[in-house]
Length: 119
Image (cartoon, rainbow, N blue to C red; front, side, top):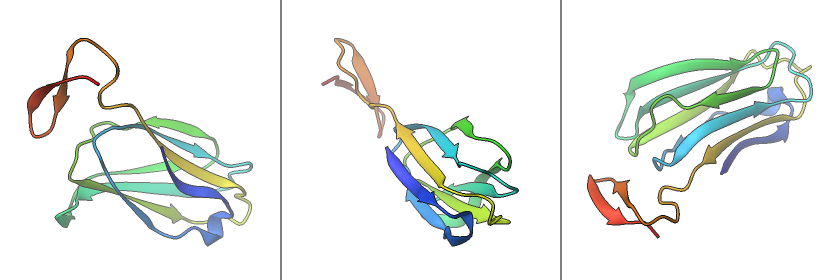
């Protein structure tokens, strides 16, 4: 798991870049009170930030559990708080990561593409 914003006032949240490992599967957006604050999430190639793959606007009124649509190594996610409402308190954003290789007797997918024994 990676904590992006840790229970802060929305108007003190800076821009945060997070390099993707390929294991991320969900992002949690929480606040004690939301106000009108939105969190923008942009994805782009780590080697070419001008090539954005998507932009999402989340929050803005309620807590959200957002399933990441397509995640792969070599991407960076940029988190930006838009219209930071001072009423938005205890802003918390966390990326959840599932285990890339869970305990199993089968084989697992690894990048670059190859099958490896699961640990």
